[in-house]
Image (tube, rainbow, N blue to C red; front, side, top):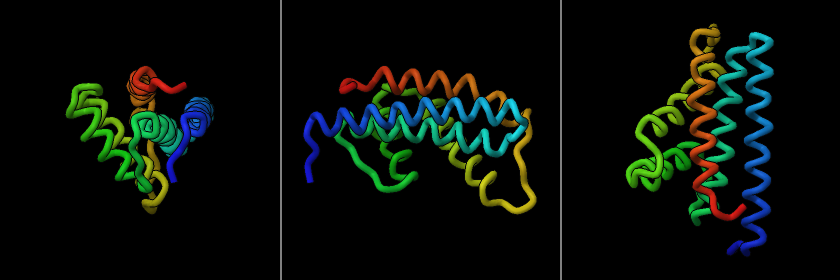
Length: 133
């Protein structure tokens, strides 16, 4: 099924809003010292905006790894995002998985706090690439 321009705009707007809300959640989790949950929310803030960017450019993926792969192939290799941006997305996905699923493991402030500024910068870069708003 093909999406109309209005459908795409609505989905993109929803995912941008979801990304922004999730970033607020990451900040709130950090304030409470919930560092594994903050890592989770940082990743999902990027994930939601990445999925909005892919829809905007006509790409789809049903998996997290697929979205990361397309971001790498279509945005990093073409110079629209930096290699560091691609690594940040992958690193946060790995951090989320470790924080969510590894036994007897928790992220600490010194691991997560430095991830906030680069995440916010990448969110701004990805948002600037979206043309259907």
